[in-house]
Image 1: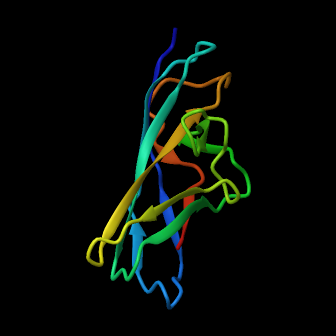
Image 2: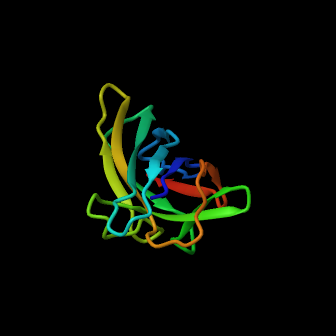
Image 3: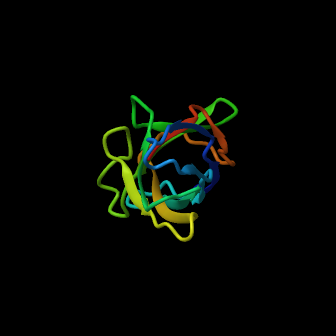
Length: 152
């Protein structure tokens, strides 16, 4: 059995949708780190990982509802090691049933606490099973950067 150690740090390019004048809050989020660890090529192996995204707001006048979406036309993402590629997907829930994209968003509310607040959500990653020819080693470079859109 071949095991592959995989550390994937999401390369995040950020876009923010400007708040309305009524909200006037300033919000941002941290770059989530997704580390898959050891890849197990056996059928039925989970090969999953999670990361958290924290949305932080300041200058709040009220609670701020928000959504996080991926700006990606395809939902298959990849990591590289030299010329080798391994594919994975990101999901909105622990069931790994709904792929995170521009239509299936992660939503939340930052609660106003004297003008500041934060809210943390989990992102779920899963390596696509049955990929042939995967060589051992650390796959840690994004072949296609993930771009997250924060709308509030």
